[in-house]
Length: 356
Image 1: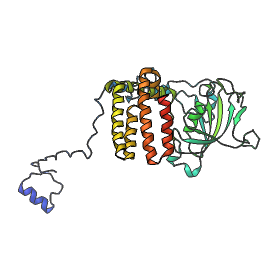
Image 2: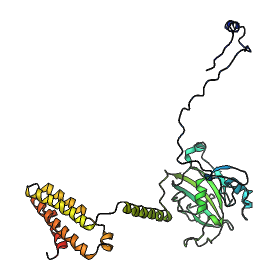
Image 3: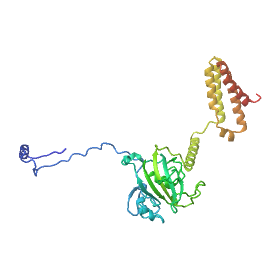
Image 4: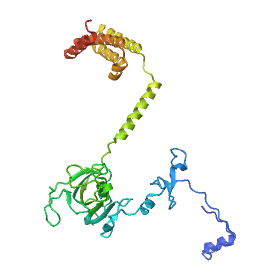
């Protein structure tokens, strides 16, 4: 809101429209107070720290996660300062462009379906199940060593079955270079890729005897289709880390909430058994069974703890309580007409009670 103070003559002339474009020297502007923000700023999860942000030593780009190399360079500067590997120069003159920061994977676009050129959703994501047709050659000789196609573009039979290869993208199911290559394609795209040996077979499989370790490859790929991204399965390192974290959490919880002594567990079980006996005498057999079930919960011990931590004397005491509970629950189940369950309890009573 702007408040304009002026004298009466100026106001009169402005009303008449004579001085519509004139601002009198006595005019004083009072700026309005700034409006409050429409949405409150989110509270930071933790105090700001400059250690979260880094600066590129070459172009001075500053931000979180900018540095991508040990030389302190961002991804762009690292790529610009990295020379093309030997053997890839001739492909640059054939229309190939680099799609990796170290220029070891090159791409030459061949075709795109006209109906899909402007569709942003036709590109797969990490974990998307992809189906491709491909012809793979050794770059040095041009010899085909693997293919899904039955015939080349000129009609020459090349040994495939036309069954597409299916794999989840970026999940290490194919060579690293092919993963990167397909990630740059859209559905229906056809492209050729030069893949340096560092992105190819580091240990060639037995079914591809023509390929040697470190061979550069040429892949001619058509991305037929892809599905919705699937959740990633954890790696062995992630599983080991999770297991370690769970063990530490279990130790901390055990320290904060130590378990009851064995005798206290048996006392609680006997207390529930006494309640069950009272219910049995009153004729409420279903309630009696429920009390006996609760008694079993109090004396439950994990099999690892039972095998390694409980001594023989404690085991005999627990087994005596178990045998008594099984007998009592057997009687309750007989009264309820559940004879098969009662027979199972009788067998367990013999197992735990032995000769007694």
